[in-house]
Image (cartoon, rainbow, N blue to C red; front, side):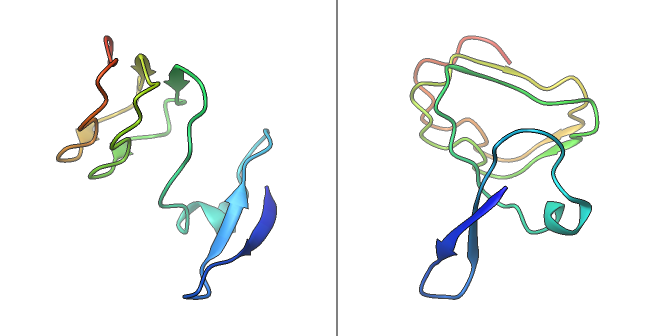
Length: 84
């Protein structure tokens, strides 16, 4: 991950470049930008937060094998989504 800068409220923006996310950053990640038509999460991802993929129009498939909780409107306005 690279620090891409600060927003006005001093929160950091990180760009994921592959590999493992450092433990000290995991609890701070609240949003992701997806530029592919599918997303695949490992079994350790148990919660998909509220509005997590809101408006990801390119998203066609989401593989979430470990998901136990999917938040309200997690896939709202994902018009092309065919498989979860």
